Image 1 (cartoon, rainbow, N blue to C red):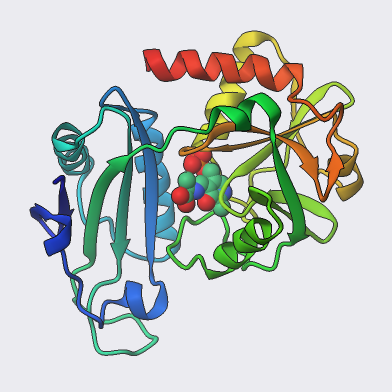
Image 2 (cartoon, rainbow, N blue to C red):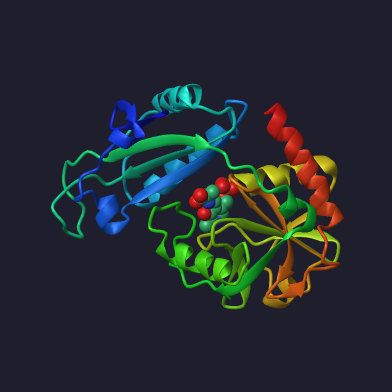
Length: 280
Ligand code: PDD
């Protein structure tokens, strides 16, 4: 059984315990990261640790570990895991204290990290694409922070699952933001587009990698606000995330996207992403 890391100690998952007064449990007062690992090599680790810094600063929590300490503890989890391809999860909460909304004084944060096998993306998802639904983005205004307070995302994702879809695409005041747990990149009139990276969505590391690949492949990209009508008439829609890589959305709210098949621009990017994964 793989070991997990909790507050400086490596121990079996079954033995890892957090007190009920942990502010992560009581308030969702914490931040997290999910890092994909291929062949025991983490993909874009530095970018994930940079985003962790951003999230911690955004909730006014000091980073409990220096960069080298994060890298070495994650490396140990990677090496001790049972599979070569993994999903690394890490979480920092504001620690254990009597329940009170205000920050506790001088309380050490809770630091947790684990590795689990990376569930491969079902080949049918890539071959035929998946269904998605749209909903109003009713989350808060700090979606650039990767916080553990995910209830809105959980409820939105579940609405997609309830309709037999895989993801819920979110619209705020008539503009696309992101998916419940993914970013969205689309092709509108032949141009690869994605919504502006601001406080309304998470700056996805996978999307960043995909956009770098687009530059290398000479695929033009525009980062700009995307109106609901443009989403609905897009030639291609793709969702990106560390655990799902790039998945084509071929049905949106029951209607076909473009031809109803995964489109050529996304497929080029996906094959470049697969190569990047294997070579790091
Ligand atoms: N979530 N937007 C949201 C709201 C997300 O939760 C995620 C990923 C993304 C994609 O970010 P990245 O490419 O850096 O994984 C965008 C992870 C996988 C999760 O919560 O499990």
